[in-house]
Length: 255
Image 1 (cartoon, rainbow, N blue to C red):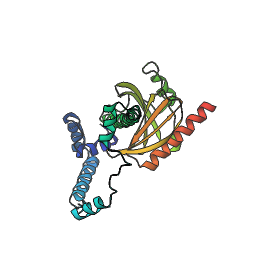
Image 2 (cartoon, rainbow, N blue to C red):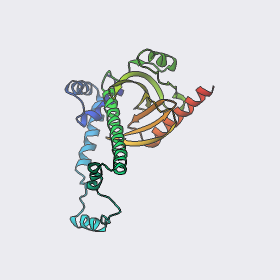
Image 3 (tube, rainbow, N blue to C red):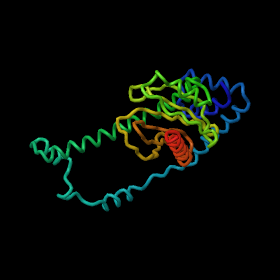
Image 4 (tube, helix red, strand yellow):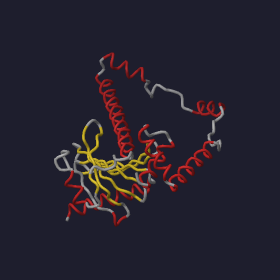
């Protein structure tokens, strides 16, 4: 294990996110490396200071009562969940259609959140020793052909080293119970996983950023492909990454 790999996994070790095998591997490296020993001690001290700083604030019960009192009361113009369900029971076509649309929206949102959670899990798995890349190369002409035959559509692989995002390789991962390509970049010591999957929607959808479990996730889609870029770098830097990736992809297609 290198110091660079250990530095990424030390945070997971402190948070208790590593299994016993990988925890022992990190601890063994730290024990033999003065630099990583100092880093681990500094991170643990920082965690203890934050934990003991009494930063948590509990709002008084009086505030809760004031907020509840200020909320608008339910009116006949705002149908309750019971009324919507009654529409199903009565066989009302209008109510059934409205409720079906509502259920479809809820299910779609739940499905998107589930996939986002799987993206985070796949990112965390990749940070464990030996899981980051299946093909290790900074050459896009080596990484892109590696995907051929392994998944239905090979993801675009763009060299953004000159723009501050170093291509380091790619791997095959699994999200939503299907194989998916992951192109791996680094921003300084931070890993960026770019997951790419085929989608039936061929329209371009503008990028948006969400935060889940402490990680920023930038999502967009274009020409039958959906992209998820995930990292612990700031949202502004991740947005910069996706913008430069999209610009380079368009330039390659136009060229």
